[in-house]
Image 1 (tube, rainbow, N blue to C red):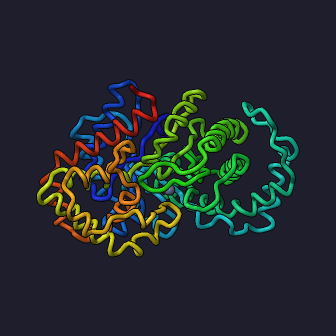
Image 2: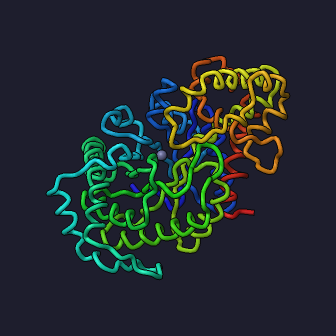
Image 3: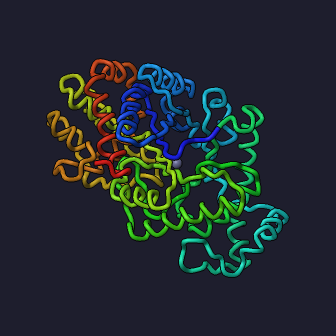
Length: 416
Ligand SMILES: [Zn+2]
């Protein structure tokens, strides 16, 4: 099983929007860009919403059938480990092996020595084709990288093997993710991480590093765009070289987590993958839930009431909402409106405050981030929320499609 060059992580918290999402992918196809849709939902989100992974598969299959999609598509067991992989086994064919929790745990001295030995030839001046200056690598550098990452990669290989035993070699797409950590991985670290991935025989097709800067949920990139550009380009070249050096899958590509809404770096990524003829995977599942709330607000009446209720509850429980997302949100509470204030808003004001259009003076990224992590509140509302989605399916679906197509896909691929 080989994933196509461009792929897009969609999926949504409540599995109501698969068709509206696929519509955006079809619009891309009609514009000449082939994108593989991948419906992803992490274990964390399933737990919060009390849903099972099979529900994502059912929604994806149904959308594919309804719209007559005849291309590839996958269901991604996002951010899984040995503790929770089982519930995804039957319904998923893409597995994101999350090793973030194991980074920094030390491998055995024996494993570290084997790794250093395997990588002896890169000590000294490491030339990566396309990068002008060599990286100067000492044995200590390789040892330090091994100490930080080797145990985690070995752990990923254990999960990988476990899935292979159930689904067979080549029966699924393996991704290795290490994005939910505080420190970005440098291109040199990436090179040796890929060496370890090859040594432990994980045929990874996508890899999700932590990039420099902040990838806060649902809002734009925060960081030094110049530095991001340099790192992203070097990562592409490192991956290219690592494929040849270590015999990794030819289609190995970067996976951008918390990838929705990073509008200021989309043109950078788009141009660089074009320049080097590289693929990309972008995970954007979280952004769709916000479009549901925008759609309900736009609907007015009972829809707007539900949107306001969600906000009021999210505001009240803000501290517990934030805890699981500490590394991926950054809310300035001095800029967040009170529920009393929001209760006075009309549809337009609510929708524009939430919708990610920076040129709109009503847009409030802090309001948006707080609602982004509040899907648990909607889950607790149960049928009050999902019935509202059904009643206002048309206007909600339009928001979902437009957001993915107009603001995301067109921008990344430079479609006019
Ligand atoms: Zn992630």
